[in-house]
Image (tube, rainbow, N blue to C red):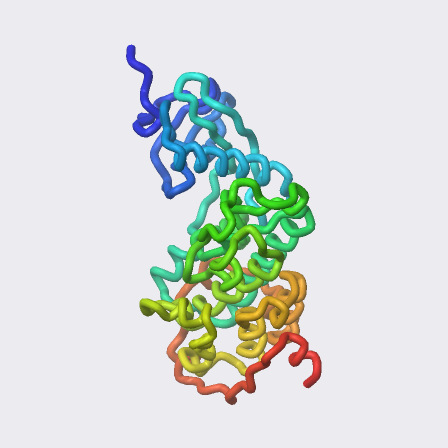
Length: 329
């Protein structure tokens, strides 16, 4: 019986001698995720990298990044981060894999594709929870470098929705020094949410690159689209020929305090932004109020913005040039 190639692993394959693969749940550049059943009959999710024998140099680099994702995720324990249950290398296919809880719900990217714009009262606590997960990663010396809606999962737990930040395949481990998996000047990340300094050199970024990405995720959730969607717009921002369009231009219902807090996360200069996700969390809490920022989220609240909110025009915000401007009001 011929061994299945990693790129064509069929349902029913026993991966790692312990996990029976079921239906495919999704996939991307860093692997494919299957529903699976473990030896005790528990349903889990298994992410495996489909790179076969004699792989190219780029595939070998992808494999190294996947192994970095396993190493990185194994270090993280926080309610707003995806938990790693197990990992290994399948002896038959040679495919590395990691095992995660089988979560119920959808990612923020799928939600935004479905409803387009969220109420501020929903978007803010979602991003605040993501801030807390990313901050826990930073405390462990890990910069995510690929924060985007599709990496923010909205898990349904006992009637509540809890944010789980996932996919640390592009993470930079600060404790390891310069990231040996990243070529100087290499473009890593997703352009719609990538900080300008990361676009210039992904090796030389710090916590503020994730702050920018979190800000852009919130911008998208509040307005219905990323700040830069037209060809060349992001490049114009990189060279100083363009600015982030004010949130209230696209979403005039956004309160001015919240607009200012979001803008302070997406300023071009890293030193002008909120210095870390904890400060962004605090800024959003101050702007929206403790109750909104920490409000429990329910599946029923994951709907599009109401007509009543859309019809409201909030006072126009005076946008900050530096995050500390918000402290001097």
